[in-house]
Image 1 (cartoon, rainbow over the protein chains, first blue to last red):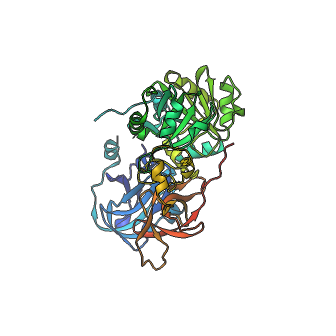
Image 2 (cartoon, one colour):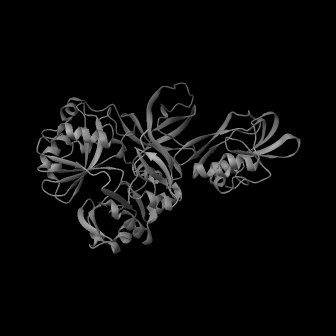
Image 3 (cartoon, rainbow over the protein chains, first blue to last red):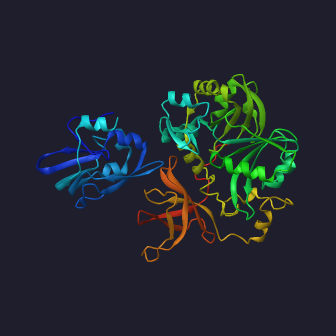
Amino acid sequence: MNNPQDLQYSRSDEWVREAENGIVTLGITDYAQHELGDIVYLELPEAGERVTAGATFGVVESVKAVSDLVSPVGGIILESNGAATVDPSIVNTSPYGDGWLLRVQTDGGREELLSAADYETFRS
Amino acid sequence: MSELLRTALYETHKNLGARLVPFAGWEMPVQYAGVIAEVRAVREGCGIFDVSHMGQIVFSRNATPALNEIVSADWGTVPIARVAYGLLLNENGGVIDDVMGYRLSEDDWLVVVNASRAEIDEEHFRAHLPDGVQSITWPSQQAMIAIQGPKAARVLAPLCNFDVTQMPWRDLGTVEVCGASGFLARGGYTGCDGFEFMFAAADAPKVWNALMENGAVPCGLGARDVLRLEAGLPLYGHELREDWTPAQSGVGFAAKTEKPHFIGRDALLEKGAPQSRIRGLLMEGRAIPREGYRVLAHDGAGHNDNAIGEITSGTMSVALSQGIALAMLPVDLELGDIVDVEIRGARHAAKIVKTPFVASGKK
């Protein structure tokens, strides 16, 4: 399992990278992309829309199955990864890099987030 | 909770790193390297599937007329050493299962049935077989491996004591593969050329490993389902159901009502032409149709959201990089017509197309 130390993790297998002023980038973890298998479809909300901590914000589909994306944070979407919706396989190959999903200006509301070590324990 | 059954290849699958899932009471590999890679391996080369979980029943002692009373197709005219498709129907003409019959001799047949229907099928046969006809189910004694793809013959041939490259489609023979004797048939469920080998379970790891050494790629149930859907082939529980007649499910050719009698024949003759039937759909956009999604009449204004049908099977096609589906739809729709598939509350256009979605590569 690959869990970068500088990120935080949710129990629904998303990761959060903090920038300044409460802006975060988020995506799904290496564990999640591996469990999904080949990702072939991604539905993300657009910039300007709201996400709510603990609520579904989109859908990721493998060849065989549909999976909800649950937001670990609440706030306004600054940017949605259009490149990933066009080529969802980058979420498999680079879940923490080019396969990021949303950049969000958080304004309150967070799920409980785990450190890399605690997430690794949770998912072992 | 009863434990899942395992085929003779369970340890082999584990050693290959397969992802194992419950399926019809068995613990089966859904994928190894990944569904997309496995689908491509079959279409471009050779893939192997463990299908030992499927029900295998041998009927003997004058079985032909007895089976012909039960199965919808005309198995009486099937030559010895040939494989034939057939349907088990209920008294209403609805489909209980689709089956493959391997005619071993004048009077002996091996019938392969879906794993999920094995118990029901056995009970159905038992209830309708006359005394004297013997039926024996081979649970774990028999393994079954499907070898599929344009290179299947090349991969298999060096391991056989017989020139399988020349075997006609749907022919059957007793063949030794790596010294393991069994029934080999040319056929399959992927829309590609291929073979199916039924043999003693104890030999399964040896045969599987030899096929891999010759270039066969291990493939799981995930890839198998994408391949059969791309080939437009029906699956029980999806396109075939006890509520639907063969004609509705696109397998009317397998219900030979010219045969004087079989279970369900009278009901089929009484029913008029079906009002709905299974059609192929190709999505226009990126969204993926899935089993159970409603199909609506194409309506740009979105005023009418009454369902006209439903998706019975759907996936992202690996070959086409586009969503494909089979759906039960009104018969008055024509090829090229557009319908709307309802996906998470939004309408997504799809076109009615011919199946198979992907051209057949079989001989």
